[in-house]
Image 1 (spheres, helix red, strand yellow):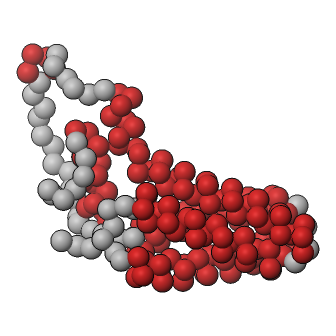
Image 2: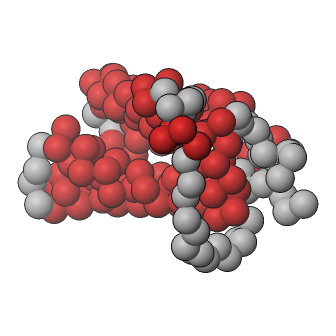
Image 3: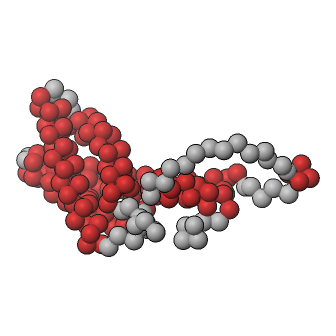
Length: 178
């Protein structure tokens, strides 16, 4: 427990996240809360402490939005240049995924003890799988169902967003058990 970062209320959230990541089974036990002096000396600051609690989620969302924006812009840029969907999706994803990997490794899952080489291999295996899914879904939605490319891209990214997060958190950047 001493290796878990955080102070005050965010430490509790980090404990729960670490327990989940380490497959530690938690159970609820009812306890009576006793406040001295009717809790006049509370140190809870709603805005400041909430930011500490939700910061890990905000960091992942920010990293994903940055990579998604870069991917989105590059997709249209390369489509305009080449009019080749496969080439455009692949090049856009290669560039945005490199940025996303380093943001996730250093900023989002920064407590991960997994080596860069180990996590990079796993990350790009996942990226390849998601790239394949990305291409197939965009192609299906754009050419099969005749949705506009913009709408196809948004639908595809929303569908693949949670899959990518879960695999990265649980497998790629998973903290080694102590």
